[in-house]
Amino acid sequence: MSALHLSRPLLNAEQVWLASSHGLPNDRWLARMLASQRFGHSALPDGLGLTPADFEVLLQRHFPGLGQAPGAVLPAASHRRDDCQALEQLLLSHRAGNDPSETWMASILAHGCLGGDHLWYDLGLWSRDDLSALLASNFPALAEQNRFNMKWKKFLYRLLCAGRYCRSPSCQDCIEFSECFGPES
Image (cartoon, rainbow, N blue to C red; front, side, top):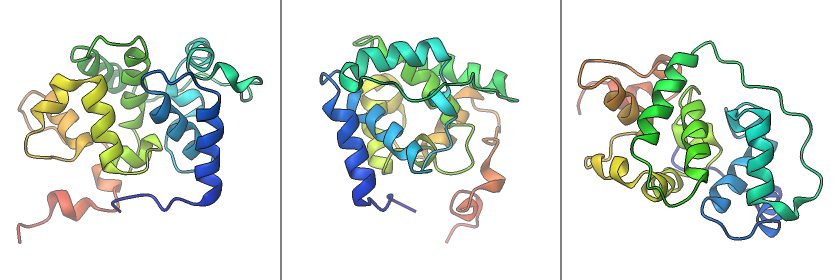
């Protein structure tokens, strides 16, 4: 899978989110994630993995024209909280420092890494190019290190494990396992 099939309702949902935004950094990516989540194209928990308070502040900052916020957000429960925190710290150590939403984006990306598919899909983005652009904007020093275009989830876990063999925890369940771990052809 290299890109999500974009249905008219999905595109319209993104436009609703964007119409309520002020054009801040990350508005487009957040709108895309929230629209995709509504249509089941995301592995992120409610509130994009943020605490209910942080999610409310994110909505007020990025989508002030929304009016009524989505329903109640439950705190994200994670049996892999340590992985999530380590990934978040890795991302934060490479943040651009241009916008406060980079902190939220680090948490959202870390929660997306816990999904079982490609990171871009687990986040509710529409293609790998979306994810590459998001990372280049928010975490440019980190994005520049991926010179060989490794899959992003695998790349982040590789950095996290600092050179020792460390498989991302959901690879065995991924539908494209053989593309990363199969024999060379």
